[in-house]
Image (tube, rainbow, N blue to C red; front, top):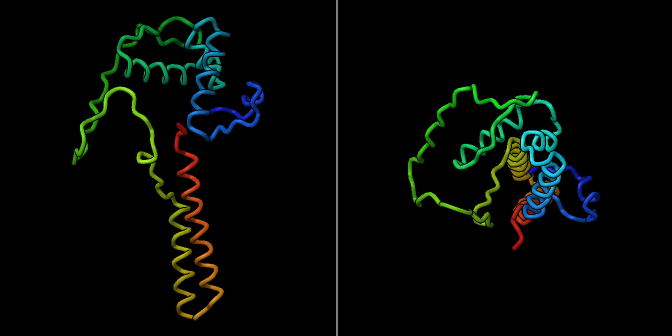
Length: 175
């Protein structure tokens, strides 16, 4: 969830780590509860306040539509900025979920626990650029027999690996 850092001071816990998955979810739910109480249970206005877009219907309607798609028993109506329900609009059919080409396991039902075996670090463009830079440094060091070039190459590669391990450990939910 997207939580602004000032909320930690608002909660009286300025040292909380918002990058921790569990802490972030707790804060997000707490903030949404705060806005629901402030708006007397009006989901549309509470979601608008949470997103900082009170009075604009785009974000609350997207969230409520996604909620309706996941929870079929919900009765929360979508609304426009003025407030009347949008029941006049025809319902769109939900697209069928795409099936993977090779299914190794059945789809999971209920609560899915996010553990270290479910978090993958996939390199972005800058990650690929970093790997290419390391390769060029290594080839140049081999070609010109540069000891300092080897030292720099392996130092940067080690820092990259430490960064990936640190990312994996901080993104893992604590028990």
